[in-house]
Image (cartoon, rainbow, N blue to C red):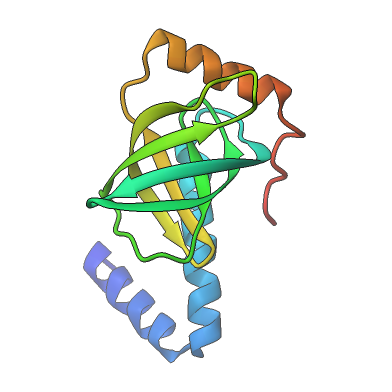
Length: 141
């Protein structure tokens, strides 16, 4: 069997599954893909974030954070590749600061965004937030 035959057979099998099983399979594949991509541990948190996408402003919460990016809880519709400007308000000790990012992952509870270029100061603030934040995010089963 060649690669095209494998792909055709996989498509047939997936199409024959009930919709809820197709969704579960997709979520499993996405988790596997991002486990391989992630370089840094994520920490669970609940940090207020204001952000702008396509000229529209939003406010939600960051659910987890790493030196590479954050996951924002939101029900808004965004697309992978959308540019996003985050204003993170961590505490009264740290003034709110802005970080440019890009939407890299979407799921029903929110969006994963990857930081673009961090200045040295921004990187240090993120590292401080990570140190002061709760436990490492538990891996999904």
